[in-house]
Length: 181
Ligand SMILES: CC(C)(COP(=O)(O)OP(=O)(O)OC[C@H]1O[C@@H](n2cnc3c(N)ncnc32)[C@H](O)[C@@H]1OP(=O)(O)O)[C@@H](O)C(=O)NCCC(=O)NCCS
Image 1 (cartoon, rainbow, N blue to C red):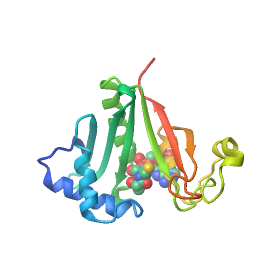
Image 2 (image 1 turned 45 degrees about the vertical axis):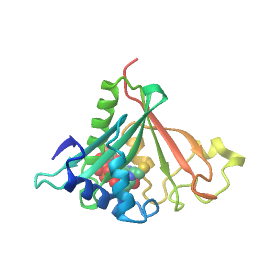
Image 3 (image 1 turned 60 degrees about the vertical axis):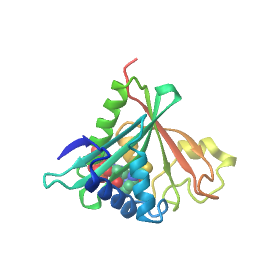
Image 4 (image 1 turned 45 degrees about the horizontal axis):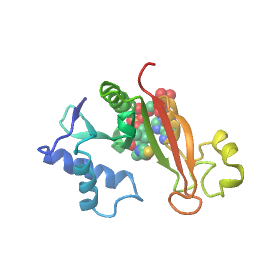
């Protein structure tokens, strides 16, 4: 397995990355054309777009990111590993690779949002406002929500966006400092 930068001339990998998005995120992209556009947008200026490729030459993971806050913060989006390859440390490797590129570019923080659209955590399906901080502090995973993956690779929950995807469907904001201070 190797991790390389995705570029405009890699038609086959752009197509495989779009297919991976469609397979993995049921709420986000309706058509393969929309997903392909998302992949191509990840190749613009002020972006990072890295893919993991297995020994047979197939794309098995993709991580992207956008520069923000004058380059102090990079927003990670998206991160996805092909179903058959999950649980083998590929997600962790992609995140570590991404973080080292952010640090090389002078970034301090990686920020990401991970939605709970299907009540996969204790903060889904409820009105968050009355006990916002308590809910944030005591969040529990009910159905394999990826926020716990991010915790395992060093991210902290830094905020919630209540109703980000409709009532009771919040976004969980997570961040990590990736540069020594
Ligand atoms: C989330 C995702 C990227 C993780 O990738 P992965 O390659 O399976 O993760 P890794 O094998 O590197 O796992 C690293 C650690 O996180 C844990 N982990 C992975 N997914 C987890 C989950 N959903 N819930 C809890 N823990 C999880 C692993 O068990 C492992 O723990 P360990 O260090 O104690 O062994 C992958 O499951 C995926 O692509 N999911 C679908 C898309 C998605 O949800 N992306 C994130 C959207 S914000």
